[in-house]
Length: 353
View 1 (cartoon, helix red, strand yellow):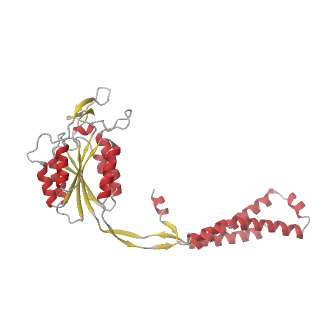
View 2 (cartoon, one colour):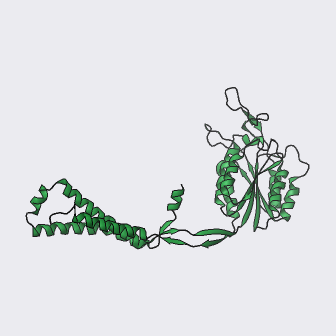
View 3 (cartoon, one colour):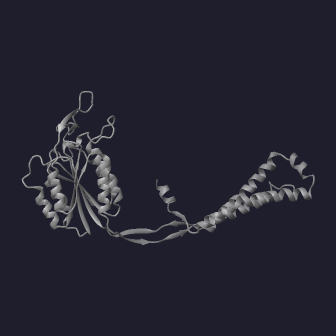
């Protein structure tokens, strides 16, 4: 992979010279016709002599003509001026700081967002795939990751290191926070605290959940939404799931894993998972953002794509342009091949005119 990335940094400063490559076959054809015609005129018996020659002579001419062909190719590449791009760039200012808050309550094990009944996946697996795609698009934005159930858990502080963030997204699983309830307010508090003191042009919190506060919290999530508004933080809220009653895996509190039958297969049952859409709507409205509903992967992807489009800002880049010339390499190869052809033509491949 590293070698491929290095090759991608090589480009041609004068690529139009490559059109000369189209002329090379014509030159070789004319040369070949001329050799046959001249030899036949000067030596009428040449055709009979050539028929008596061994395959070695024919093979030698193929080698010599191939060398000439490569000489022309490398000379053409020399004229095209290959260069190695050693330019560097650094972000002077980044537009958006983003915190992703992901619900890890037991209801995220529901199977209603599976696209294939033969290969069922949980709501959480769908969410992880979509947010990884979202993160990959925000190359110059700092992104943090908060998981929550009853209490919030900082999975990753805000960072520009997207590879590190992708690995932390893979870590998300039900039971990571050691609880299975839902406290939306605690997630908001954690996300807001990570954003409020920053001086970025735009600060947003994207909260994704499939339920409602359970057990009931001491404070309404709207209190935190008001605080976010005062700190110029937008809160986008997303409710996921097709319905309140759905098939789901069961979570085993003792093993911190899926509950399984004796044969190892996970236990599946039908459960009710109501979602408080009203409170999610009020949270987003309070902070001048939007509330969304996603019933499948396609809808969820569209939501994150819309947020990506809405929260675009200009990014200043400091670019240092450095190009290393590489034309000397094809030129050197051309000279070596010319010398090699000359030596071979005057020695072991010397032929009768």
